[in-house]
Length: 454
Ligand code: GLN
Image 1 (cartoon, rainbow, N blue to C red):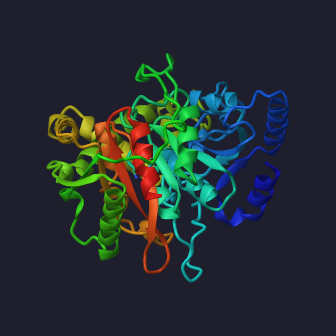
Image 2 (image 1 turned 30 degrees about the horizontal axis):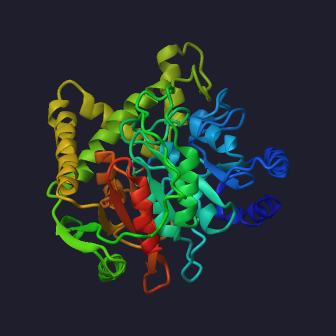
């Protein structure tokens, strides 16, 4: 814990931690010591972690990197963080992210962007988003592991950009209670770690059946670490042809082949498969996610949470809503609220939102059919490129940023588990990753496959 606290101080330029809790960390580390001496240690006892800002931690600023939540200190603890503390983990502080987890470059944060510890010629690169602070902190050894959330790739893409492991669990595996909502039918919390084994340990601690989350699945949480064998003999791995997109750099294609070879060498069978509705995933995602976000974000009205704008003479309640939301939300969040309310409006609901829901069902069916055909896991690149330069997404062309999510959003639409593993490097030496998709609630199997790629 002391080594991490010192490293965090030295690494201020990464802007990974947005709120540090050294006093709590030391108190928790002392309690962990006592637990270890008493012979009562759990796998995470005394392990210092960073927590994405989107998780509510009692008494600690939890703003999802938004100005509108300035001054908000939750009165309650998210189930995920409570589970981690129960396992003996130590809290180092809150980690940077995109505002309300909307973004792929950590550039929409009210704290400014987090910076990738990997560099090319001193050019600052994005750690990805939205869990950019989590990825930067783990990659730079500021903490032993971190929590992230993945609505459309926000665990896996930053993991790929920083050379770490990121696991997005099955929807319902990890409780959403106390996690500030972005798009509730897609959001899922998961671990960001240095190794696959660490991901197994973290997931075991984070996951639980939670009556406080109505979508929490009543499925027992296995001992993921005990289940790690790396034995994938006889497994069938699908290579989805639709993920070979136009303009994909040849080095990503080469890495993908290399990953398939590694799995084959470990005794798996490699099978070409088709997930025909993949090309509709991105547009469907960018209808459904903003729709749900516009509804979730309606609660930030200047009354119930955080910040209220200064009002002028004669301002009424409407002006209070307008001014508070205009100055409290950043541009990307405002854009999504506008898109969301538009696609949900009476005149356009059928044309956009309902259509997107149908597409979502077809995407899920593609996966169901592949698994019904005996496929055990699906291998694909995590991102269409290595980490890009900071500021590149400020181009005023949001669609370009959305395109970066082309390989990640399908999994959230289908509710399936996935894991991003660092596998190689591009010609500049930056990390590149592959991801594996698995059957619902078979995270253990997924971790075993990932062990082979590590
Ligand atoms: N980049 C995607 C978005 O902006 C995904 C974000 C996420 O998974 N939270 O919506």
